[in-house]
Every structure is written in structure tokens, then in C-alpha cells.
Length: 362
Image (cartoon, rainbow, N blue to C red; front, side, top):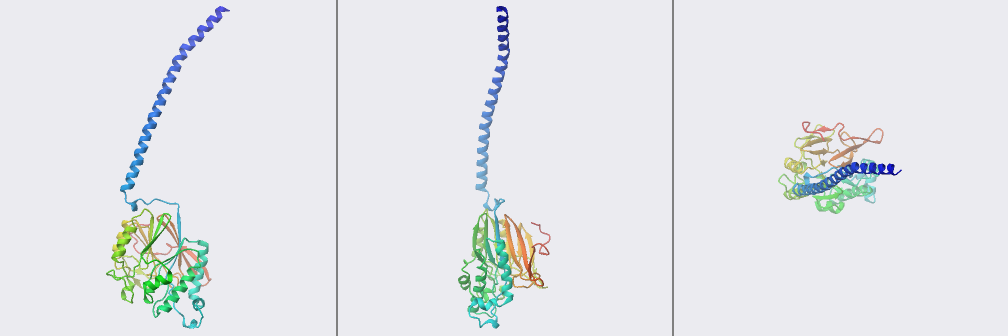
């Protein structure tokens, strides 16, 4: 018994000696791994700090307008233009502004369709791109009444209103009159919401950049003032996605008027403005004066010429839904089917006149 016990102890000690080396090797390996992990972690931390510092330095030295990023925010805008309201003599007996215009179907019908669609769309803003009134042969009282009627109709939509001054408003009203009726800021002005900046410009200026408050042949073209250019360049220095709204177009070529063989030219200083908008990576520009269904993409900027709410052109009673998704606007055209008395819609690009086909697509 003693012999077997002694033999068992020897065997145990023998195993201990063998496994002692194994345990030692395992321990050393574990120590190596632990040390390696520690130093790797320290090195990774240093690298992470260095990368973070690099990103911060890069942001500090990279202009804001070159740092536009994709966003999940969506901004919704309802856009109308060119209703050109005037007093109808047949209804001059009416007791108030509402009655004077409610009976005029050509005004109420497109407005009713627009308000109905906006109640579904639920826009963040509603924008009038100008020429809400006819201007011609309207004195200040009739012009103010017509514009006030238009404002009250748009105000029934539960969204803030943004106003672009058209050339026809200035045929009956001064800029101050326009501001008083609409309660709009004096253009140029900007509003910001989330990752977006909306800029409104006043293009009702002579080719020399001088504002006009009277009838002139330069109504048809327009330009920006020197002060507006200085203001605009500062506003464009942003990482937000920028969209510009103005009355006159900024095309280099003449653009076909919708439903007509006529062509219209755009801003006197279109080339200068386009260069600035391209430099600061503006996403889109929306205009109405040309009353055209036209599109151009140049230097990364998308230019949209929109048809009128009144009923002329290829799409009677045209208005628009804009869904801004970062720098990629989704533009839907709505119009009134005269036969069916119903509202129809189409993607803006369907049947659009491409002003410069050689340019890149969005």
C-alpha cells in the first residue's frame, strides 16, 4: 500500500513538473496578450484623438458651404405665382373685399384647388412668387384691395407665408405698400428651418442695379442691386442647404413662355448671379416671371421656371409642391383639368423644356 502511495505521489509531481511549464507558457502568453492589448488600446486612443483633431482642424479650415451633408430633414413648400387679380366692374357693387372677388371664378377656382391640396400636403411654408395682382390700370386702393384679398385666401392655409415682390405689384403699389399689405419683411431676406435656408430676393431693379417704383420697360428683365449681392454672398456662407426664390429668371438663354411661341429673356445680370450661386453650392432656384415650364441645371444648381396659377400656358391653374430633401428637391406640378373639373399632378420634369440640354442632370 505504501509502495503504491509513493508511486502515485511521484506520478503527481511528474505531472506538476510537466504542466508547470505549460502553465508558465500560458501565463506568459496571456501576459503578452494583455500587454499588447493595453498598448494597442493606448495607441488606438492616440490615433482616435489625432483623427478627431484632424476632423476639427479640417472643419475649421474648410468653408462652410463646402461642408453640406445629407440630412433626414424634409422641408415642404407650397408655391403659387401669377394670379394677376384685378377688380371686375361687374362686382363693384359688392360690400367688401371678399364679395368683390368671390364671385369671380377665374380667381376663386384655382385658389380653392390650391388650398384643398395644401390641407393634405401640410407645407412648412407657402410662397407667392409675385404678380398676385394685375397692376395695370389699378390705383393704390384697388391694388391694395386685390392684394389683401389674395393674402386672406392664402392665410387660410395653416402655414407661414413668404412673399416675393413681382413687377406687376409695382405697377399699382410701392414697395412700402406691398410690405404693409402682406406684412412681409423687406427683401432680400432669409428664413431658416432645420438644415435649410430659404432666401428671397428682390429682382425689381434696373440693369444698373437701381430700384424702380414706376412703370419702365426694364420691368421685363430686372437685376439685383449691389447691396443685395453683398448681403447674398454673406448669407450663402452656410453649411445649410440653400434654396433661392425670386421673381425674374436667371437663365442665359431666352426661355419659351408656356403655351406661346414667344420667348422671354431673364435678368440683365443673370451670368453674375449664376456664378455666385454656383460658387456657394446653392441647391435650387425658383422663379415665375417667365411663366414657363422650363428647367436648367448649371454648375450644380437647378433652375426652375414655374407656370402661373391664373390659367394660361400648358397647365391651367398650375401650382407646386416642393419637398426639399437635402440638396435634392422633389417638385410636383398640380393643375386643373378643365373638362373633368379635377386636380391632376405630374412630376415637374415630365414634358419640361430643358434650357441647356448639354448640362448635367441632378
